[in-house]
Amino acid sequence: MKVKGFLVNAALLAGAVASPTPDQAVLRQPTSVKSGHNAIETGEGHFSQWSRATKREFLIDWPAGRSAEWTIVQGNEGGDLDSMAAALTWAYHLEHSTANTSNPVKAIALLQTSTDALDLRPENKLALENARMSTGHSDLLTIDELPEDPETLAKDIKGIVLVDHPIALRKWKNAPVLGIIDHHQDRGVNETAEPRIFEKVASCTTLVARQMLDELEKLPEEYHLPHELLELILGAIAIDSDGLTDEEKTTEADRTTAQRILERSNWRKSDLDDKMQDLDEDLGDAKKDLDGMGLRDLLRRDWKGDLVDTPSPRTPTVGLGFSSIPYSMDEQIKKTEFEELFDWFAIEAAWTAGTGTDISVALNKYKIKDKHGKKQKIREIVLVVRSDVRIDQDQADDLFKTVKAAIDNEPTLKAKPWHKAGELGRNRMVWTHERSDAGRKVIRPIIEKAVMSWD
View 1: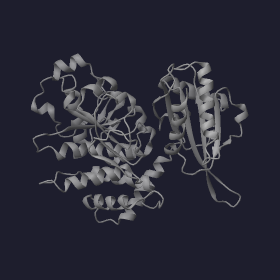
View 2: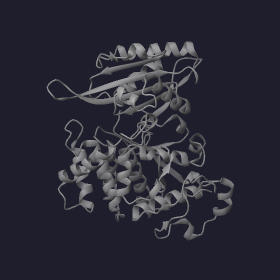
View 3: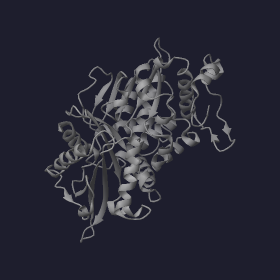
View 4: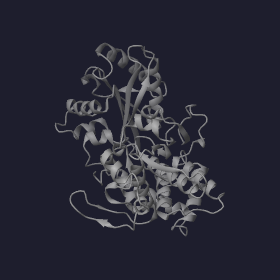
């Protein structure tokens, strides 16, 4: 058994803790543990204690055959602050709002990123430090710490709740979807989920926090909301709404929910706009601190991938993955060892080989100054189709043409070939375009539609 990484030997754990004593089931007072290279410092405060205790109980229950008692709350695999805060908030609410009922819920937040990838989002690291969580993210359950693969675990657990994601990843398809709270487009699935909330707001955490407060205020007696959780919520809303200043993204729901949370926090005497802008500035500065990252880390820090169905009887599914990178292609090339185009694609190929991806799409964005000194947002789309995972070379050639045509023919993009497009190899393409809102939410449906029509 490895405590920090929670790499659990099932037989050992089953024998050792199948019948935990009362003091095994909950954590004692936080302590500092410093021994060897896996040393951690246990976090301070109620929120850290709860998160750590919940993770411990889940890993005790699994080998004891009690997985069916658990609800897993999961965000998207990109693992941004919004997704993380939303999952942690709703898991906390599910457990505490039912604790004194005849049907208490065991709920745990699952971050669908690996432990070593959490710090690739510096804003998350800062937010968790501010929330006084344990070092090494040992309070949090990450995808690489699950004691068995999701396909198997999905059959055993009570179900999942999706936050900041409209549809379960294919590996969780066998799990009942008990609830969905999301600010993306409704895919029209899991109609019986409760709650089932789709609403356009800047931050999904807004919807989760609003639902939590609405239900909390109807309880006979309110449970305790730790200030660290409240501050984490405010940080997530702040960074997604630019401190409530982005008029295109920020809604009345974002503002009113943030105000309700603020009034319960240790910042209750602060002005809402001042506090949200301060949070956005601090977290935003951290978010931009990526200069020391190499290309592989940039590719995986905001990676979202899943299987997509096709009409082809030969290849009924293909793996599609997206990365979002705040640097131009030219800047990314400079981050490679040889600072040349071939090296970018070599690193990309090594990453996608490990993820089993057939089609990878890098969505780059950056700003330049025009002749008047005004900043202009530029976006790039990098498309690569592999022939060594699920499809052969002929299929890869045809699939590449299909997806490329979808990008070329999308009238709202007005995509133009990148200045070095002529140097690209087989089944590779890079475009530039100036549609400012065309991130993953816009590009992914275009490409998925093309793949689902490919035969």
